[in-house]
Length: 116
Image (cartoon, rainbow, N blue to C red; front, side):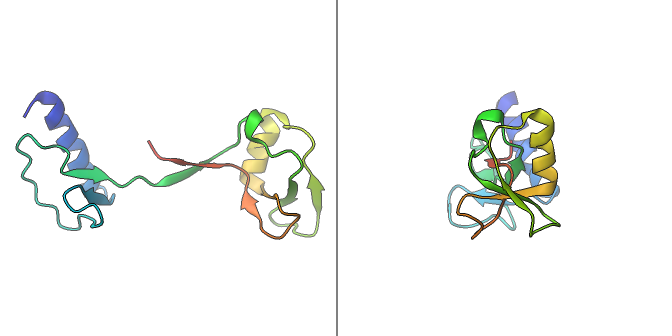
């Protein structure tokens, strides 16, 4: 194994030790609950299963026209008419939820991304 392959194998094994879920690339539909570490030159035996993470909206992602409400005050609603700026976007992310279907369903104020 090269140095880079060794670093990748260590990263994957450390993720397993830390409780992250591994996906076997030999059987992609199976998770690796009890991995068999026989790397040879194949560091692509396993991948760390990515977990989505919610992050605040950027200014161009704010859904103008969406309904907003504070999580604890479900009866009070208003419509988003501008992007709100950085401070508002952080407050929305932490304390509010939004609806783009006139209050039928409510979602967090942010974007789901794969963790890096």
